Length: 469
Image (cartoon, rainbow, N blue to C red; front, top):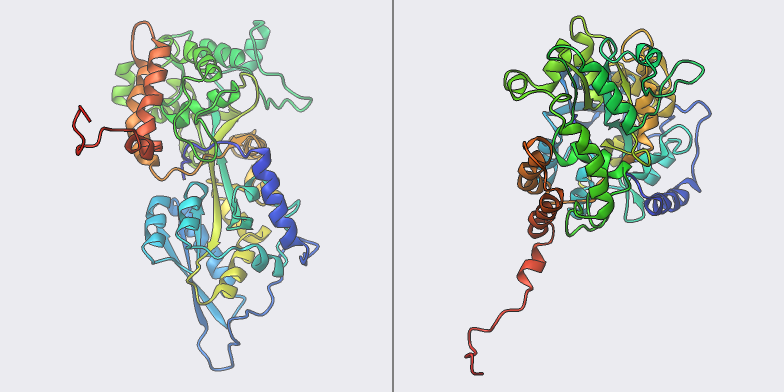
């Protein structure tokens, strides 16, 4: 699940969620080991000869993820004779959203954080706070607070946080050899006592790109010229992608801080000696170039891990997105929701309580595609997989707390289509860059999409009045 551009949780939004959760948690009953002990469902008792109640669970993802979800469903079904969960799968979250909004929602389903606004507005969700509270789900230390907070709206926890996927930098450890760079007195990220490098500056990022590009046709870095690709650099430079993080009316690329962050970043991304040539990009995608050893670094999400593990002769690791002023990244958070139309909401809550337990989420985390919101599993060998690459998987866990969560935008795809050509010109157009002109144009193009009502409210002369009147 490749995450869409996604701003960071603001302190005021986190405070709102904390208040909402405190109401729910005032009656909480949590088990000591973090595994839920669901009470009998309130949907009616399943007597001796009665058929089990039917519950549907909808999920999306890769074939491996869907297969893991099926294992979770099978394990849950093995514990009960009074209800049976059936898995329904979609190819992606867009297909899931369309199905739910069309009235075909499963009883419980996986959703993306960026779809939460539409689902709440459509009254498609049954908030999960009290239902999961009653089933002993510990909202405290056992789950990422940032991930849980992301699913709060209207003073309710609308869905239970399940997983996250922050954008990080993947690097080829043969091409970016920090030990050799350090011996040459080049800028490198500082390692802790265990040799782990978990933060680096834009200058160190540039030094790594130049070191990797010093021979032949190898190139140092590729960042997608999109809102999502540029957003981490903008936020890290204390800029803004949108003019408002709740109800945006425009992009904010002409903001002074945003322009400054872009100026520093584009000095690297527009350097033709560091980025793939047009000929290279014509014959292969950046990911393919990375897998072949022709590209040293790419930005990506956790979903890349299984594909890169399967690549031949590729040694890789991960680092956070580089820091300009403050740490920042973007990404996606997924959650498990209950349909407002479900007739078996108690059973659906029982299943979600099981699905976020250590045992169940470990099954899905072991596929390598997700970063569990369950902090116990996120720190476990099932996720960290110390025998596999990347060695520094803890970077995914630490990056979630710096992840920007976007405002709700109904016209998201329309906005992306409108501004991407201009963003591509920022990063790839040859010649001298008119940063001021292009950023102003980006903002202007975004405004009719993000705030169409302002276009229609401009004063105009009434056709019934003559000029003399």
